[in-house]
Length: 170
Image (cartoon, rainbow, N blue to C red; front, side, top):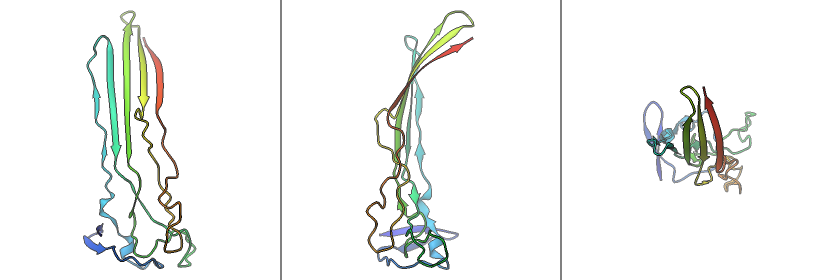
């Protein structure tokens, strides 16, 4: 597998033969990060026309996987920092989780007088109840085999939620 890393100039580095040893801060290649760091985020939205007094709108949000640093979880080079990376692993080489959510809103406006009105709102967030996870556990562990929880989610975003409301305008 070949990955492209970015710095002031572009280089291609083979990551197929990784040796898990101590990485020192004098290694220049360890400070380069993955060139795929840009996180595409799409959020198309649409508001439908009012039909029978109702208005329907939605927002679909998608964000690609967020990179993260892989750490040993111990101070292997004795510099009093526990943020050492395994040898051969650059910055932001881990892949996190993607995010996807579909939100829907249904509203209706009632006008009582020229100046007095009432909006009735019903909103649903993450309607498909997709499990969206936060940052994964980035501690690889001190050995050559990863910890059992390495790469597993440490938190989750909100599940499906509904919200109902009234808005009085005067």
